Image: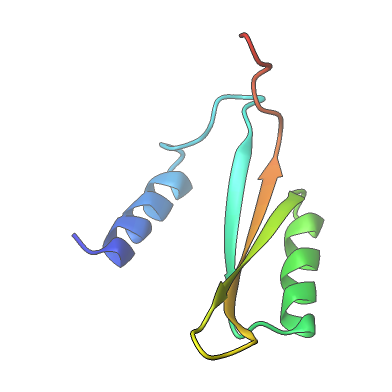
Length: 86
């Protein structure tokens, strides 16, 4: 099974409610942004924070021989993770 097929299968399960996290559990979102630019990053950040996700971090993928990133991954979370020691 290809990565794209596995991703589609997970998305299908989530739509049917089979992969929902327990109530109160954290939900995570990873967004790939390409091409990387001020506007594309702003659009992605604003979209997912508007959906109730809290921005966590941003990671850039560099292309050899270039000073500009080829893509960026934005990490978001929503809800709360279980307290440590639980």
